[in-house]
Length: 360
Image 1 (tube, rainbow, N blue to C red):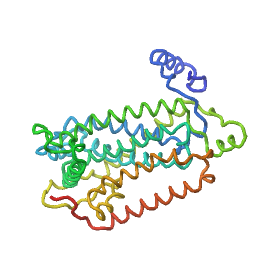
Image 2: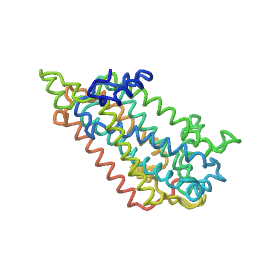
Image 3: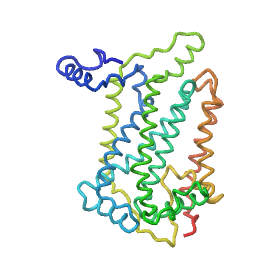
Image 4: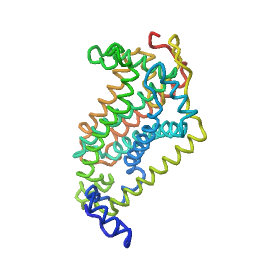
């Protein structure tokens, strides 16, 4: 897409943009953007992307002071909080942005489901989105362990037990894999290299497919076309305006998380005590906590696997021609039941006292 006159202001800024675009081909990344795509519901993916950029930037700074060994990990976090330049602020921004990114990923997934944007020809992008959701959860989990407080230690205990349940396939999580590198170091590598690399690959594929298929039409407009009306317009706004709004929301996230980091000290628990298990996981893991109570550690394998598997089947089961929620009532009701069940599981996990699940 070539930048149009309405995309960039005329005059000096227009000449500057032309010079930059001539050398970098930025306009080639653009695609037609309908007016409704600038609403908050359709820009959640872009907000999430800029959240990841904030996480990457603050993560690079935190990595300068972190030591990924059991002996020094927690002490290095204490150093970050109390001594390192801007360490406490960077850690706070990292912590709060991780929570916001998880929320926007879930909201983005929900919006796609409700508006039927996972339907043909966007099934592959739905699966890529599930991959990004899984990677986001993996980043949060490994980040929890890297604090190496009581919560992180107990999370690692679950990690090791699940690795044992996987048998040979769980070798990565085994403390005996390498005598020279503690498992905390391997999780650090996963947190800063492996998962970000996989996420970058999926993000590139995701953006290319958005460019290929465009932003999905509003369900009512799409259904009207299915019933014989005119095809939904792919125009109405511009890629530049869309990008500016995404950047604006990204700056809002940065501002909000900066304020939170200044007002609320990012938590760090007590040093690990191997003889007790007293922690509960972060809110995004709480829906699985009751299953662990009821069925033991194996539930931490099959419960998430069943959920991701069910979500992966959505575009292949929800195959009606229509996208409006009113014409897909069965799926919308099923989705609402799942959401209510998840909220109920979280409420149960919050109320129920912490129990020991791992042999400490």
